[in-house]
Amino acid sequence: MKRLLKRSWNYGLLLLKGVIAAKLWLLVYVIFILIPASVLLYSYTLKSSEILEEEVTHTMLQTLKQASINLDYQFNSVRDTSNIIFMNPKLHQYLSSTATVGQQLDSLKELRYLVDNAQTNPNVFRVRLFVNGNRLYAGEKVNFFALDTLKDRSWYQQVRDAGGTILWTGAYLESYIGTESTYVFSGARILRDPDDYEQISGYLLIDVAEQTIEHILSKMKLTKEGHIYLAAPDGTIISNNEKDLLGTTLKSAELLEALGQSDEGIVPLMKDKNPRYVIYTNVLSTGWRLVAEVPKTEITSRVIVLNQFSGVATLFGVTILVLLLVFILLAVIVRGMKRRIQTVIMTIKREGIDSLDDRIGTSDAHLENSVDHLIHRVHNLMEETYRSKVQEREAQLRALQAQINPHFLYNTLDTINWIAIGRNAHDISQMIDGLAKYFRLSLNKGRDLVSISDELNLAKVYLEIQQTRFPKSFTFYFDIEEDLDGYEMPKLTLQPLVENALLHGIRKSKGKSGMIRIRAGREGEDLVLSVTDDGIGMEQEFARSLLTEPLPVLRSDGSGSSYGLYNVNERIKLFAGEAYGLDIHSKLGEGTTVSVRFIMKKRC
Image (cartoon, rainbow, N blue to C red; front, side, top):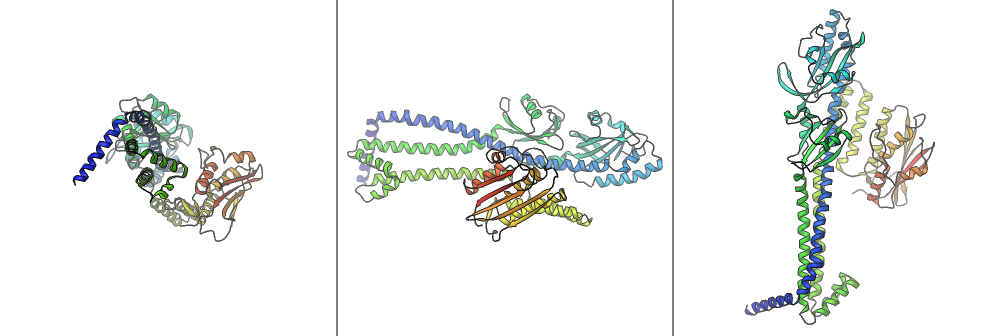
């Protein structure tokens, strides 16, 4: 025990003497290693924080866009109900200035049935008709009201100026007979006298409970303190949990300018008392903006957690370097240590780390083993840091994207299908069934890879749906080699090519008709799929540019960007390598062939 204590004491003294004797080395270390490392760490922290904040806010924007799609569905459903009522001839017969009392009574029975049927729509809270006071039941005050009671509304003149199109009002408090006062949105439009079209005979309002919209927005969990609301492009607040703010205008001039100029975006408001990010997107059916205000502290808190881990790992690495320097400084006062250190360093530079294994077994190989262990330890720490970052990032993205319930979608489509069958609408049933298959194949239970047969079936279902949409405008054929089902490929690869062939090839041709042929087969060790159309074609030079530049292309409805050939090509290269991807052959006026080449990869 005494011998051990004496040896430890001597070792400590030796270490202290080495540090004192190497003050110059310590000064050089601080100036050329420690200070630059601290500056680099600080710069890295700032840059990584900026990148991570941008990624988090863009992920939140994608979540808002999904919510806006759900809102569009709700408002479009109400718009369809309004159109059904508006086009009903009984409504115009009732509103006719020449209608007799008997005709009005007969029409009212039909209108009562029509209103009751419209209110079965779960998105419709109340249907209201405002007509001249001399009409029968104008004072009924459940579904029929006198026109004069509407004129004091702030949006009355806007509806009148809309000329018959639907105008959506902001949320406002409305009183109904038999129920408590409720905040509602109203889709309002004017009704004209069928005998005198220049004369306005009434107004049709379809009310939607604000609670219905709040239910959709409440499902989004962006942050704990984040605030979500609806605003008009001019900054007027349409819907908000704080009812006192309804109808007021946003105060930030920077935000008002952004809302009026673009449909979606991210606006950092860092000069206000409460620094925050404002993320917004467009609700197409109403023209409103879905806005989320997220405090900067909540976003930066996530970034700080990630950067703290990186900082600890970096500081740990610097600490390892300090300890290594201490060992090197200690070796300066030990006879013979300099030669052995130089030998080890030269061996690593010439032959690599594995060469240290060959030196084990020689006299006093402790230094070589220590260096070998140290390098492997640093390498393992770097790998662990990288894996932990990737796993945390994937967990965040999956949590934000897990907003869609596929079972709800399938069950809804199946219900619509049985309703269509029950009403002998077999063409609608066939299209709904095709759409359900399309969603099931495209979602693929969240997996990114699908079998080749599933990908081909997805393209077939898409073309069958489009044949229903564009009857007798095109035909399609499949030429598929056998025994390909044992292989897999990235999902949604073939469908964008088929869509381009139909919408940008055949549908833009002079006759708007043609043929699409899809082939799949082996070429050596590769899988090759091709989509050929006899549409308008394009210049070969322009066709090649589609694979080298992310050019914007139109969706099938003619608005915005769709999934372009450039993105498909890049996905394939990431999946199979740079040697694989898309190839386009086209001639103006004769058609286009797009080929996809994959490496043959068996299904797991």
